[in-house]
Image (cartoon, rainbow, N blue to C red; front, side, top):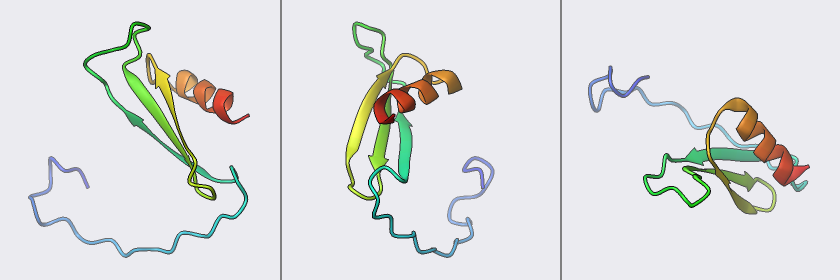
Length: 81
């Protein structure tokens, strides 16, 4: 539910589900984007793509100038393929 349209404290609870155990490295990864960062780098990187492997808990941060689909997908492929 949108945080702007629901009154504070009225959001219904969601039951927790078990996350399947992943034992093979890089079989399952999660990603998130941090930004925009108000002090961009000299290369104009204003975002950071965070990738975390479920099996090993290995984390990687990839600087990004923009966060369109093509840029994020290419950053993922470049760092994991």
